[in-house]
Length: 493
Image 1: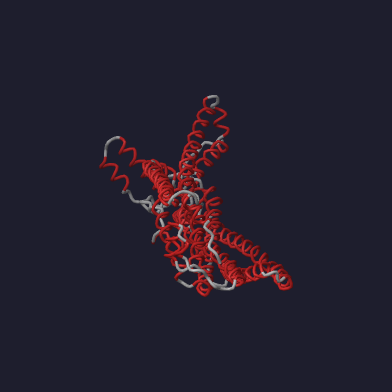
Image 2: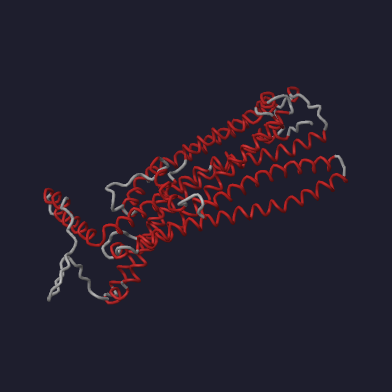
């Protein structure tokens, strides 16, 4: 097989000119890449300057847990793992539950899909060999075999997507039933909405649970399949080009993953803040609906005031989404270049170097264009075509699998953000359901008294008010008179 000089021409900016001119072109290309990297680093530093403002918005937007004094930072750490395990116990209570069986079925489908992909690469290599060798009788047999094998492959693809949807739906169903049972127990719904025990309960029970279930189901499929693909394809490629031929490809992905992790924006924090701001904007609209009669009674100034509240909530959401979209744009450029295009180039270099004398010789050939460095392969051309077609297909599949695995941290951080919201929701609903309205009302009264004393400048009274013991539950006795103690009085609509 004669190695085409087209690859070196593309990398060095053309085949014409002297060696010094080609080196200057390569230097310009490298300099351009460094300038782009410097520009992106500047943007990331500017984004970190806006992080404090985003965290301030998060402090105001995210609901604080009633059972904890301090919120843990949203990150992929031991707290995230503990929260996820606690939620999974609700989603998959035992190994024979419907959710657990769906996860097992998804695993079996992923294993079968990888085996089908490996067989299809073998068939494609045989088809290419028959076409080049003009062996049309064998080509006919290979073509019909390929067409027949595509039927189960299509069924497996559809089955994997269906199973993923069912897993998300099953997780959502169990979480929703669990939350609704707690939410409607011991007047927790009244404590949450009237006494201010929890904000945006409707949005958190519906939208946050749905996003968490979908992202978790996607994470399992998009993480397990790349691991299986890499394991099987690496073993097959070792027989075709050896393990050393794949070392450069794996080294490229290791360096790329380290670079992408270093410049990646805080995705878990971004997801958590966006969910909170979206819930606040939705709650502002629900407030207009619930208090439409009072607003109409005080209109025209009432409508203008509500419009200002809605504009403020929407502008916070719009600014946050706009800022994070810019960060994601620059990060996606590096994702595509490092994990897709440059990885495909490395895979082609890997195959060609194995059949031209080694990786070092081929790299030197790329730099100076001297073909005398290369060693011609004396293998039969038809066998080489078969090997080339199969190897390139496996390398590309391996590139895609490693890219998905490297990018899995994005999905994990997204799941971390949703896990934080759902875990806090479970804690808040459990607290409200356990304590009841009287205890929550007493806590709120103590906090308001402490805040009033602190505003007046009496810090000692504020500390004393904050540490007041909870008010005992109301007493119910039989008699001729009815008296009310510690009862909230609200005017009717």
